[in-house]
Length: 313
Image 1 (cartoon, rainbow, N blue to C red):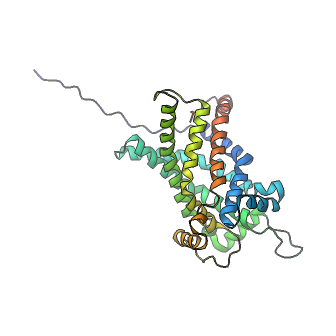
Image 2: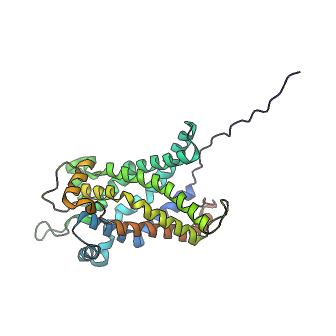
């Protein structure tokens, strides 16, 4: 008589499916978010990081002097639109594949999720966000005065061509390593912080682990998590300084991340490394409110357009 034993088979690992309607939805929402309050906050943040002697109000006056209302939308077209319409697809494809591979390597769901987000963030930096953030910063910080009397100020595309002709790929990707570090820490910390804040909200509102948070609770939790994730503002200031076109005779040449950190710290101290943190927190809150607030309406629209139901976030 042979003894039979019930062997529990491990669950088969499956990759997260990539929904093209989700990619379309994300691109549309990102572009709308940037085209409303997103870019003005981005321009103010970058101005403060590049001109670390200016206060918040002085930065707003400085931006206004560069074109009035339109000054707050410098770099929106085409750079912010290119970034907004592509970064979501890169993140989804790379993070899904990386998360699957890390699970195969033995990591648990939490660890694999963080590493998937980190991998997606790095891919975003080197594939699409590097040159977009560089050109946005160039547009926000370059002089808008005519180089020679009677000669028109070069357009954004002309400046791009000039930089590419002079410095090649490296020129239009200045600061890309800082962008990669920012994206890595952004996605890694946001993942963990969002979960911690969400758990705290569940306890505060006496909700079980399976109960859904309301739209207001989601927005509040994500806004707190987004605000806390601004701890890495120094790397954002370093990124701006590496890409900036502001005139600074003291700025070292051939800047690296470590050289830039040293220069900013010696020039402006610890406070200088956190310039622009207020509009950055505001930007994080706006992105959250926009994505959560308009997400459901946009999902309904995409479902009617494609016949495919986008997955909720």
